[in-house]
Image (cartoon, protein in one colour):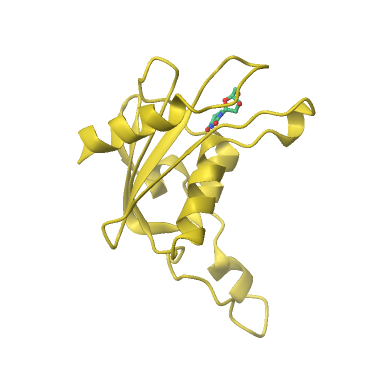
Length: 140
Ligand code: THU
């Protein structure tokens, strides 16, 4: 499964639009219903509006039916695992299975290890009257 994810991430990476940083990223994940989703980074002349590979992956996840992410990897231009940025850890967290594993450069880690004490809908529900209608993948 990890080999397949690495291959899918590398395939996505080759589609990256990264004319500014020249740093191509591809991301791939297994969903809890057996689907695979992927994405690549898409840069912009307005550097701050660049879309990370994880954004494309999560967009495909939601567009193709949602679900929880159970395994994830992103790779650099050499096809080696790279570390998801802080913002993308939060983006992934929203759709993560509680036992989700991420293939980090240092090895496999859980979503809670890469984003300890992560902010979730539970934090919002604690202070609002109506619970958020989430996919349920972000409960701790
Ligand atoms: N990048 C990603 O796509 N995902 C990450 O988690 C880290 C950074 C992209 C954004 C930008 O296009 C390039 O890598 C250099 O920062």
